[in-house]
Image 1 (tube, rainbow, N blue to C red):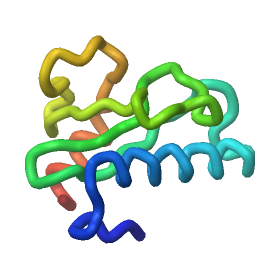
Image 2 (image 1 turned 45 degrees about the vertical axis):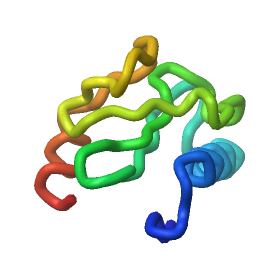
Image 3 (image 1 turned 90 degrees about the vertical axis):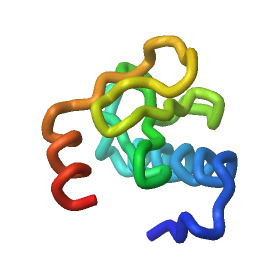
Image 4 (image 1 turned 90 degrees about the horizontal axis):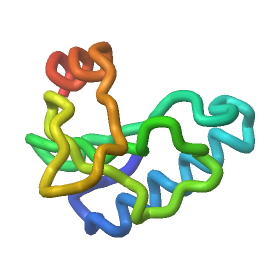
Length: 93
């Protein structure tokens, strides 16, 4: 488990890249399947982009979205928040 209170945005992005590659190497995320996300703060999520190889990700590929799946700032469209993800984050925080 990641202790977010001690991590900067860049450190959290690097941790998500590392975890994505680990899951890819274990065979849990073949090709461009799935996505990973972590709560960035009370209002936003840090997530991997949609339709991207989890092995080839860089920290600059990560996307910040709100709990409704809207992207922060003017990032290009790289993410699609699944309805089940939305429900889980809203219900369980």
